[in-house]
Image (cartoon, helix red, strand yellow):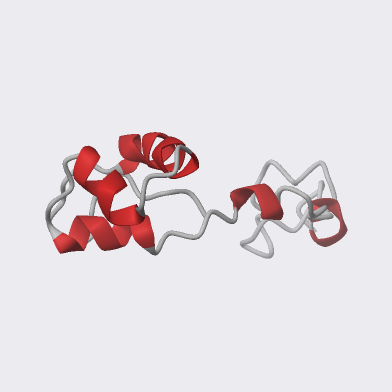
Length: 92
């Protein structure tokens, strides 16, 4: 999906390095050399970039059809009788 902002293990900020990492790979750097150039020496941070799969562009191609499951507009008030957002307007 989207690259995490921080390393899951040590907490170092890595989210700002993703675009630079991709640029270095396009410039014929090896994965190890690109990570060294970014200053990522811990293997926990290195694995965060090396194993990330960028799926956001692929997911944007699909239509979610959100309105089939939740007809719009959604009810804006909670029903007094049902205790949920059921859409009753008169409370019965």
